Amino acid sequence: MAAFTSEEIKRKISQIPRRSFILLPTPLHKLQALSAELGGPEIFIKRDDLTGIGFGGNKSRKLEFIIADALAQGADSLITWGSLQSNWCLQAAAAARRFGLKPVLILFKTNDSSEEFDGNLLLDRILGADILIREGRKGKVVRLEDAFEIIEEAASGLRAGGHRPYLVAVGGSLPGGSMTKPLGAVGYLEAFVEMLEQGREQGIGITHVLHATGSGATQAGLTLGAAALAEDVKVLGISVSDEREIIGRDCLAIGRALDELLDLGLHPTRSPFHIFDEYLKEGYGIVNREVAEALRLVFRLEGVILDPVYTGKAMSALIDLAGKGYFQRNDRVVFFHTGGTPALFPNRKALVELLGPKA
Ligand SMILES: *Cc1c(COP(=O)(O)O)cnc(C)c1O
Image 1: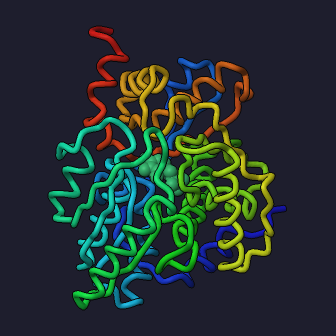
Image 2: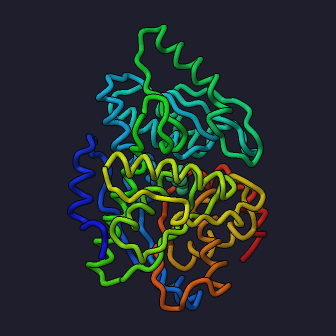
Image 3: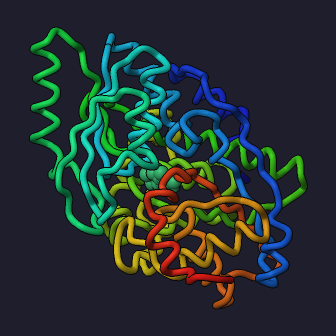
């Protein structure tokens, strides 16, 4: 017996203020040709790349709650940070503009991609976001310690000019700054409910969910969704940014905050957070051959475009796990397409080199 019904969870989520501006529900459909190519498991895709704002992606689900919080606090601007080609920063900036907030982005260079206006950085520029660029650590995701001073500086500058900035951490995941609640994870708890209902309508009988994991709210929300509604569904996070211990710690912190916020009484521990860090390889944002090939395979077979930093890595993991017999042949795995496609273009050089001159 599940701890809750979908209706009960939806009722709890409806207590959290939100601004609805994305296209929900996102489609859930089968990847028939890919499933056949791999010889099992049966693979389905949840199209969170089609949320309809700023090229789509998982951050927009989070932002429906985060923007509502910023507006409730009377903010007139939003400060956040990420890597130079951050999907989060673009979607946050797009959502901020949509509601009249001025976006201020602190972007760290974490790989060799140039400061040319390309991919997400071009879109940030078109939106007219205030952009500050800083050196980051190569192949490493940006953490609060790296960004703290400069964020404080940017925030006090805005305050001195009479503005009211809303500060939110990279990815919209960990509570901190102006966002005191795990609002990002609320979006992904809801996504789990949405997926489960679609799975029931389509008679799928989902056994696994697999997705790219970074700042933790996607995994925390989905994992608590499984704990609340469908304990037999296993949520697998493929790390693109950090070792298992670090992501696990963040997921647990966010999961506990979500449990408390919605009074779920699930008392999460480390054990339901399944994190794979063996696909990190060269590090965050560094494209490798397996990723390039996974991207090509899915585009060719299904016409679906993945991105080279997150979803391509997660798909390369799915393919590898399927090949190793991790899944039963008739398991039904939902791959969450969490977006990120603008990052294809600034990675053109690596992709072309890895894929070679011809088929
Ligand atoms: C941010 C991001 C993720 C990871 O989501 P988190 O909630 O930060 O773990 C996955 N895929 C894409 C494309 C992203 O931009």
